[in-house]
Length: 434
Figure 1 (spheres, helix red, strand yellow):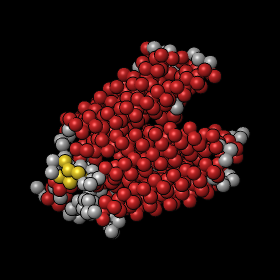
Figure 2: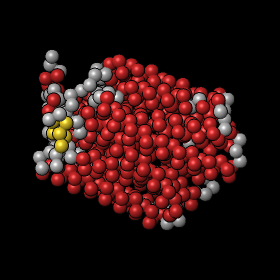
Figure 3: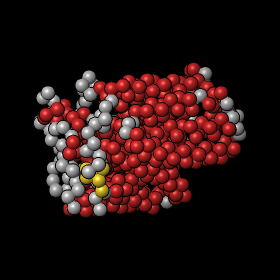
Figure 4: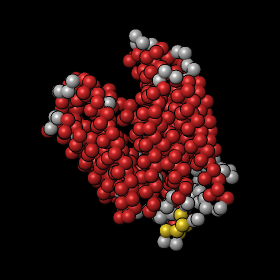
């Protein structure tokens, strides 16, 4: 049954639940392929050159797919039909990804792996941005914190479950890829069914009114001078993710070379720390999403998450022990969960043109997550080698988190609460003519 917020119609809860299922499937697909399946296949196909070969596959796929989300998002913004703007692209992305994943299971060369993973990643990005844009399209602003909290919970759970389950099937890559493809298709089907029922019931919000659309290629960009708040949200996310991932992939080496654990024990402790951080993220993403809705603002949580991460990154420097690393895991998990819930909800409230091009703009915003994850390992290697080891790495990451905090404070000073839902949204034609 349709609920209300202050007399305004809000989407049925199953809509957000179906989006959380899709997020779970997407995160599971990425984790299964990138963490388990792809490295195992590369090692089998090029055992004497596996590090370079895996770097080639990862770098190529990133270079060729970085523009996928803004491009697909822009196309979905301009799509019209009885299924809405997002469903056709979500379905197309899921089906294309499933085919590519099935083919990946049969790849017989590193070149084939690279080509097929590019196709699969573009398709998964299409599904990702199409479903992500449903939230600003359909969920009232006062409820987006809880919505992104639930979606973040799905993503974190999907990634963890995928690594644990697919890790047992590395000797059967075809079966593992087929299972991942099936989960992606079924999750997308669940979203399509829920969205279809909602549309038949008349609950879908109409697209925002736009006076005129810019030429397609020019419309892919955002003018940072005109859209200062969106730009600051983008920069804050980029810096936060960079700070987080500067240390993320080096935790095993931190335990052996900085803390001083023997390799076997370090491997066991990494698993415990990962589980600890996972639990902290789950708690934080749910509590922060609900709380930011409750108080009616996001920026204190965004700024707080940056401050908490900056402090957390200094703990292993001051306390280079397993206990210090455990405290670090809890604090960084709380910071990450808060940033995911509050930051993502906040950016939907500062989208250019009142959210008329939500698909394209969320695709651009996601670049702030993808780019630093890719660059962080290489930058971390330079810091470790040139600036004094792992203590310098933690200090550098903390400084980057402080920069994210500074940008967040600037954003907080200029952010006002937007209209609560589509009924209150000012059409772009009217808003720009004053």
